[in-house]
Image 1 (tube, rainbow, N blue to C red):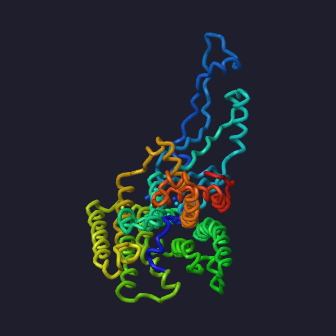
Image 2 (spheres, rainbow, N blue to C red):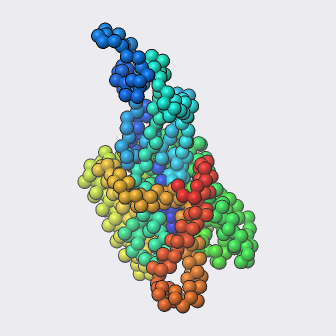
Image 3 (cartoon, helix red, strand yellow):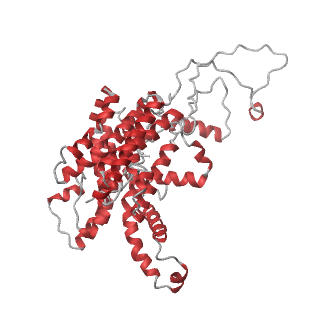
Length: 499
């Protein structure tokens, strides 16, 4: 399988899906992130009595005038949680003792990342708050002396629209590349490097919890949508003459490229992203520990494996070798996610970051064009070393700009339709990534049927690839409606047509 065939998700979350996934396939839409303080830890303020409203005054006995004011006893009042501004990096809001914690976006997909594949616990203090709300709804007035303290409901975790937008753009770029095959697309926006960078950030955030729990969460987010999709692909290949062997186990856990026949290759070739994302998830507890021992040296050395494979040893010519190449190509981007989460990039001088990024971009671009004659194209997907360095420089600038300038794209919420599209893309990243190739495959015979309708033949640009691109997105939308609910089930949430 060549690299042009292997271009895929972003996710991802990531694979993104994830493509976060990334798949990433996520995802695991989660990332130097600032954490919210949850319920504040400031000094306790004494209870300040307020003047009763006009409605309350009808039920509170009035004291005759003049009246000596009675001294008010201060009531203990827990401080309210600070308001989280929209677009702040994924925050973690801890509930009251005895209640479940509200975890941030990094606990979602599949960025888990919605990209990519994370957990999100959705619990709340529904008992006391529900009773208080019921009393308020019935208009029942509680005397101040008998009123019980009402705990404010924790604010919902805010999503970072900067990362959400990057993930959505990565998915769009993947579908565009698989439609038109433009070699320059990866130079304009290296979607897979971006997806792995976002997924690495979310993974570092999630690993603040026990590592086994985080890994199980990723697997739960990633595997059910993959299994659901795989049932249709495997059955179709069996009908078209495929005879599987023991390697069919990779259709259960894709630690290696799942096998298949040539008839279904266009559908299953994108699974390299899910396989790479899965290996990064399994290795992340160790990688993060090594990174935090020496952040900058670990970040620099993460480019060494792809250099070794390119100039010293090409690795075995099997599924293991293919996995080594993909892991080595995007290892630096994944580690950049760690660096962003831990604030390493933000602490570097801007001149150092810009110089290192431009150097990586320069080398990656030069190597791609210098070997154009050997590979027949300057497409980065055909050149792992060029892909690794170009993606490294590009993603480093994106991550550093996010941390240094505090970019959050919060204004995106003012554009309701655009904001809605970004939300759906992140919530259904795994579905979009897995099903987009099948949608493009089905678009061809569907358009062929349009030629049988004279009006369509006359007025529609049936020969245009742009028309196929549009039909492909319509079919992707159908698959999102029909199959996206699997992501909700994997996340232990109520299935919905659209998030």
